Length: 156
Image (cartoon, rainbow, N blue to C red; front, side, top):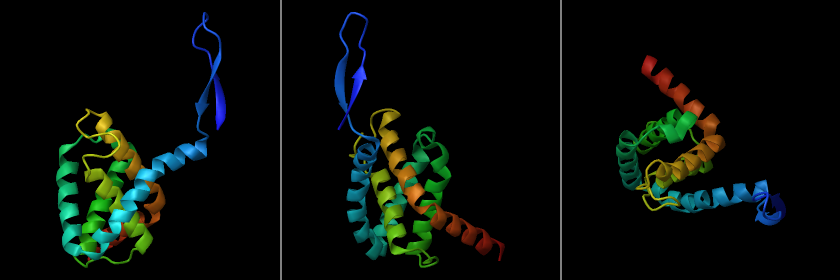
């Protein structure tokens, strides 16, 4: 573990504190996502459960502030539409690992008892937004392909 020197004030001596290296910080953030991946497998094989997840996530997305999600908000919406198209059997052109990442992010999003409870104003959605952004980074091409498919389907 790296040590960082921190000056507290002119009166106090410099002390060292433990600070995890950047790779370890990323691993800590992805632990919650890894747990969500395990639960995502049960949704992927049960279309009724997947539909329930979609409905719950859609209700929550309609009722929360968008600010914590920044640039990932449109991708969260695309994730929801992809899940809907998947359980309806309309779209299956998605790799299993990427589908699981998307389901895991949406599952984490709806979980009110995640790392930061949703009841805490604004901060309650920061961890949700972080997990969604992490999933978007892993599945961006799949989501872009899905949105292209949507556009082509609508035009037909």
